[in-house]
Length: 255
Length: 214
Image 1 (cartoon, rainbow over the protein chains, first blue to last red):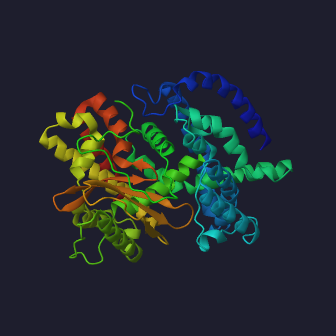
Image 2 (tube, chains in turn blue, cyan; image 1 turned 90 degrees about the horizontal axis):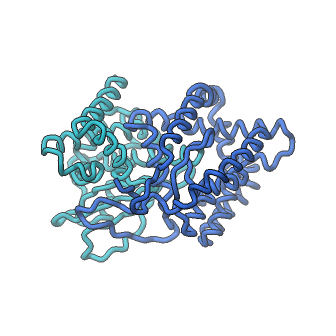
Image 3 (spheres, chains in turn cyan, yellow; image 1 turned 120 degrees about the vertical axis):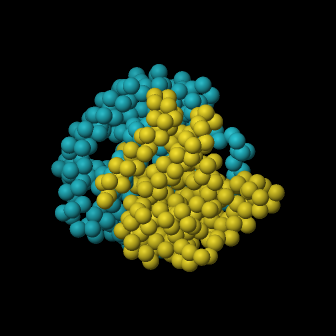
């Protein structure tokens, strides 16, 4: 999608400015005395904009897509986009020093790209190679960068200072539009990727409306907690939680 | 936004498995709670079996799921600790009656959430990580994964030893501890409208959902 990549470039400019003010707070929501959402009032505005856009355009289109397009076709589309992301996961696992997992994800990509008809079939899962998604934002985290303040971007949605730095790379690396040159195909693939992602989220999205007291807060806290936690799932390890009577975890913001 | 959506999507599914732990095949058989990993193993397996075989649960029958959770899972959960953790520093300001109501409504909120997600459980299996803990530990985290299509779903449990038995007091879905997840939302509401305000909002949410389903 050429318009997207242009707007991406414009976004980068804005990012630069915002990040200058945000870099000081690259310590993660758990740092004592630090607010995890210093730009809340602005973020809420963007959030509302995204919600309105979703309600009026994206959700109806995704609903139509999942009603009209047969399930096997939708599955194939989903597999295809996941396969592209798997290659990026392999790179990031390597950067994180998780070599075994990296090789596994590389294998997944290789198998699905060939035997799985360019990723349309997910053969790897069938033979026991589980997906393990990693991205550059998480890699920065493994390298010691805290999540930083929470940011909501127009169209892109929830992010953080750290993940925003990684966002352009993550976007480009997981975009299937890399492999096609033709402008029309690019647009079509980009649109399909977006619709596929939204369609996957339809049921959970409805559930979310029923369980969140305040949708903005709920999504923010889920995002920050999730992005700030690192499972080294390659190893078997048991942590001992904090003693009784001290429910505060390291992920928690100071009240 | 894709990443977050995937998280929530799979998270709700995983949480369904977590909260509906041990929907029983044989309701009379209580789970053995003498070891933390043994307890989780048994509850997980029973849940998965029941969900796969029970059409009513797959259909999202809320009453059935609640009664099963009450009968089977809740005896193994220290729900007071989970609620007090979510409510945070305000918990001690609440009267015993308010605490009870908070527990009831929070439980309904969580169970209700997962009833819908249960309909998505089909081809999953559960992998349990070996527990590395010394026998003298009084608190452990037991880690599991739900494997199916796509990424494995991380599903961890915090357990504490009370007397001779182990009890669950928090659940982690995809890196999100549920008590932590609600802490900011709760304190936001308490800050605006007090503890009774939070109880009121939770009750309304639950009633609205019950009404919508009926």
